[in-house]
Length: 253
Image 1 (cartoon, rainbow, N blue to C red):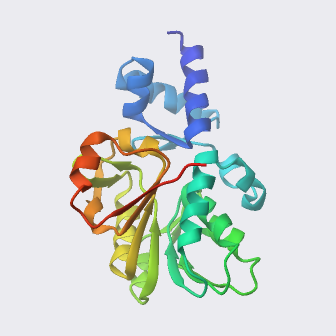
Image 2 (cartoon, rainbow, N blue to C red):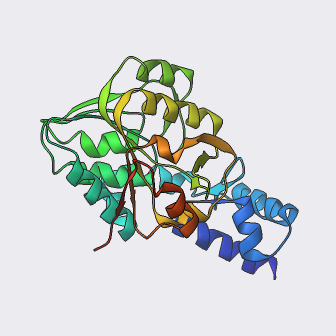
C-alpha cells in the first residue's frame, strides 16, 4: 500500500474514532509497527493528527473547538448511550463525570435533569453543563491535557475529598476476562479515585471498546454496578458476567 493511501486511511480512522492505537493500525493496514510509527510521526509533524503514547488522536485544532457546537458531532451511538445513562440519574443526585467524548455526550444529556451536583475532571463536559443554573459544578485541579482532561496526583487528592452517589466512567478497552484497560497510567489513577469515592459505579462505552487492547489495567468489570453499551456483549464477556451483579443496559433506538 502506498504511503499516501495509508496516510489517508489513518486520518479517516482517527476522524471516525477519535483515537486509534498503533496495534489497531497495524492490523487494519497490514503493515509493520515501525511503518505505522513513521507514518504517525510524519502526520503529526504536519499537524494532521496528534501523536499519543501507543497511538494517535485528532489534532488540537479540533480538540479545542467549542464543545457546545461539537455536541452535534458525537456519534449516534454515544448520544443514545448518553440519553440512557441520564435517564437513570435521579434529579438532585451527586456524581463524578469522567473524561472522554462518551462522558461529554452524557453531559449533554444530563442537561435535561434538575439540581445535580457534579464533580468532573473534564473541562469540555463542564463547559456543556455550566449553562444549567440549577447545577452545582465543581472542577478538579491538576494537569490539563490538550483534549480538556485534567489528570495527575493533585486530581486524585482532590477527588478523594468527596463521596458522591454516582461515578460515570469511560474506558479504552474491556477484555474478555473482564479487565478494564486504558492507555494512560495517570488517567487510570484518577479513574480509580472516582470509583472508590462513589456509591454506584457506571461504565458507559460503545461496542468498539470490546475489541481493543490497551496497556494499563483499571480493574475488573465486576467492580461496577451498571454497564451501558450500544450492542450485545461479546459471548465470552456475556458468560463472564452471567452470575455477577452488573446490570447490563443495551442502548438502542
